[in-house]
Amino acid sequence: MSARVPGPVMVAAGCGGTGRELEPYLGPAGLDGLDFVTRSITLDARPGGPGPRLVEVPGGIVNAVGLPNPGLEHFLATELPWLVRAGARVIVSIAGATMGEYADLARRLSRAPGVAGLEVNVGAPDEVGVGLFEVREPYHSASVIAAVRREFPADRPVLAKLRPDVSRIVEGARSCHEAGATAVVVGNAVPAAFPDGRAGGLSGPAIAPIALRCVATVHQTVPEVPLIACGGVRDAASATAYLRAGASAVQVGTALLHDPTTLARLRADLETSHQEDP
Ligand SMILES: Cc1cc2nc3c(=O)[nH]c(=O)nc-3n(C[C@H](O)[C@H](O)[C@H](O)COP(=O)(O)O)c2cc1C
Image 1: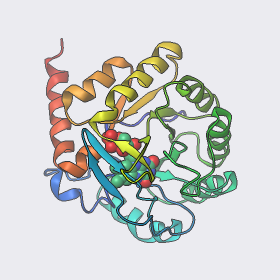
Image 2 (image 1 turned 90 degrees about the vertical axis):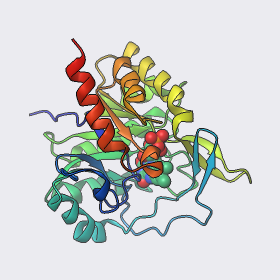
Image 3 (image 1 turned 135 degrees about the vertical axis):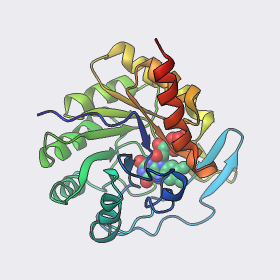
């Protein structure tokens, strides 16, 4: 059995906290039935980068959080069981320093109860700076996806999260799909800098036109690749633009940091516009 593509509205990696922080803002259903992508989990705990980790800029934020997370063991013992009990469909985002680490994470997560799927972070805006495996070439990301796919059951989705690099996105999406990705997430934050020159990633409405260009180009060139859009989704109009361009789902990130009720509103608005569409 092949895996179902999640969606149509998902929580983007790292922007829903551990789930507990978001739950009070989701209305009566809470996390029940929600496709929740966790922050990226690494084998060992990471404290995250030095401050300031976020700065607001026109149209978005620049962040360099450094993928803080408690490490796989602690995640399996605490955060995962809580999310599963809350009814979330948990997609665990994974990040590794080597291909072997990605494979190890996939193997161990395949045995953990309640893991609905994996999202492979091969698109961090500054992967070398944060100690991740370097994935500048499409064959790098495809090798990581193939290694993960070998370790994870075929009936559960493996998503490849790429950076929205307009010049390489078609190759990246095609090669990850051929390597076994159920869908490609386009994309991560756009490489950017803090006012003092430190490397970071830009997210929020400012990047939506870039990610939209990537989604549209991939869909037109390789329509067989299922797409999940991520970048600046904040309301029904921004989500619909992606869905019309060929995405089958959208992820919401930075908008949740500004207003955590965005997700509940967006789900209701999309539901209404779907019913109104002839
Ligand atoms: C504070 C913060 C933390 C993030 N953490 C992660 C992460 O752990 N893993 C990941 O793949 N992406 C992470 N991202 C990227 C988001 O998931 C998303 O791809 C990006 O911000 C673009 O979407 P947006 O404009 O809706 O925020 C993070 C973004 C922000 C702002």
